[in-house]
Length: 301
Image 1 (cartoon, rainbow, N blue to C red):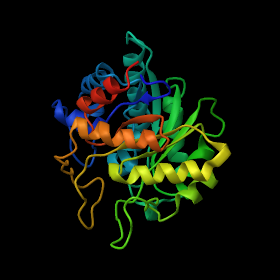
Image 2 (tube, rainbow, N blue to C red; image 1 turned 60 degrees about the vertical axis):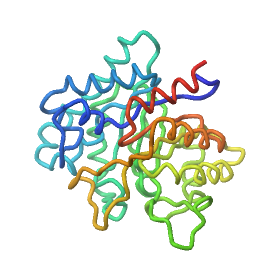
Image 3 (cartoon, helix red, strand yellow; image 1 turned 135 degrees about the vertical axis):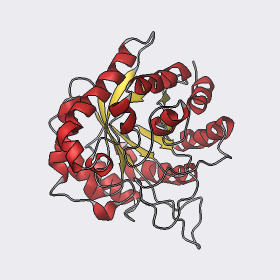
Image 4 (cartoon, helix red, strand yellow; image 1 turned 180 degrees about the vertical axis):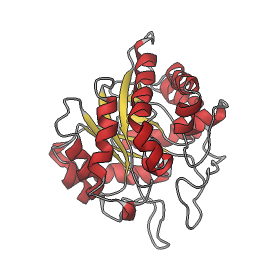
């Protein structure tokens, strides 16, 4: 890869759907874990074959929001452990070094900071942490919508020896009078500066994910400025969703994908993130192995 650039994998859910795995709402990517986990292995392998240097364990939907509270209580730990085991095995059998990130996802709905329940979150996240511990190289708290949510998950992981990466999701709701080249904020409405103050000295990398790719360049620039001399690795992995409809809920519908975000277009967009200061790049929902292959080929040593 280009010196200093790490390419991570793409969107697990949409890749599972593409290869014919059991897939649908509300279980999303967890349905394949439940019904036919070999598809999860194949999806990971597809991203490794495309050139990804890091794969994310398929635990994103292993939460009560997607499984329901009863199934999570009965099988959540088992499914999270299975997801981590599969990712670990794919990494360990690869012909080149592959890292595994343990996904620590939103518990109460993606993009829904108003639904965060700080009293309930630690015990639920602890299930996922204990199930994946010893199987992953680092922790990735992803699609984090607010500073409060970040602080809660960071506290759960505080005693773990593995590095902690945290990835925030950005609002896609650009105000009518906003300048798209500079406007960005977390889904909670908090600023990048507020977030930078919260993570300063506490994490090993900060990323942005599961938002429109157009939102990332200004966010990265603002994060670089806000961190100043406290600089740490910065990353970005966007989704390819069409604009979400009013009242969208992340476990109710399967969103359609944009048709303009080709592999070449994604590489060009990611280059702007790199120019802004990112050193970790990949994809989220709807970013497929062909996108990751194009990124990897572009930044191959």
